[in-house]
Image (cartoon, rainbow, N blue to C red; front, side, top):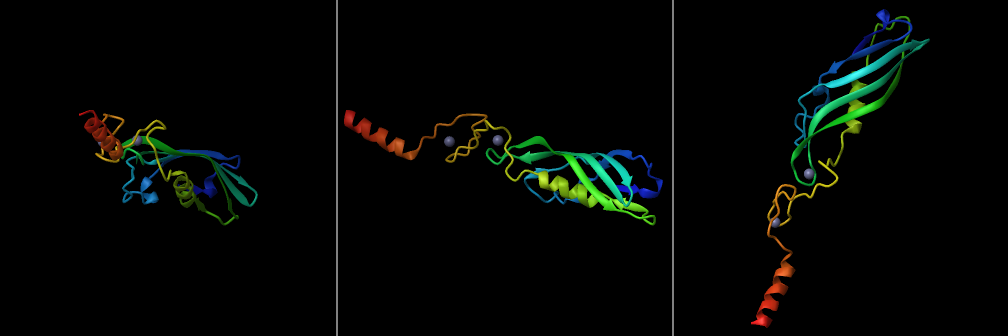
Length: 153
Ligand SMILES: [Zn+2]
Ligand SMILES: [Zn+2]
């Protein structure tokens, strides 16, 4: 997102639009699927020798749950984006893109979980315990029940 400082309203101006998510380099990240752009709503205002830009950013994406390995829809948001760029009479444009990239990447979760109640995968058979139950028991339990049965017989 590039702001044309020469044409900017001296009282400030709202900019709303989309920035391609390709700036994030998340395409090769196997834990995230990004198919939509970053949406920004930013207010830019020149204040003497500075251009102050503030507002919010939002990126919808699919993240892989760290417990059950299913992809789920979520979004990364930054609602207090704030930057000040030095400007002079000669400044023509200010490129906000690198800072949009930085603020979105900071908000991307390191260990996404589809829900706080996610039950994850069975460590023995791999069944998704959110969708089904399985017959697995800790192996020590099996051993004890076998001894119990022998004692009864
Ligand atoms: Zn999950
Ligand atoms: Zn199991």
